[in-house]
Image (cartoon, rainbow, N blue to C red):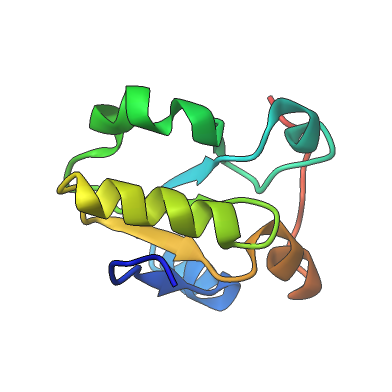
Length: 110
């Protein structure tokens, strides 16, 4: 679908990472109006159109989990980053919709 293999994680995987105190960055690539409706706890806000400009900030050893509304745009972001050689990125399956359906919390953006 994205032209390159995109690593995916589920809400349950993130719950396990949190329980293990595993370090990762959580990045919301939705638009500002979408983000105003709520975000995942601890998420950094980085709208999709800024990913090419700020891609170097996402490189490094710390895993980056990217999400959007349903997982399509975040999958595109992951594929783009992989094409740029930034491979420690993961798409959140189902996006914030899947997160909410799994009964996980959504909070107001900072």
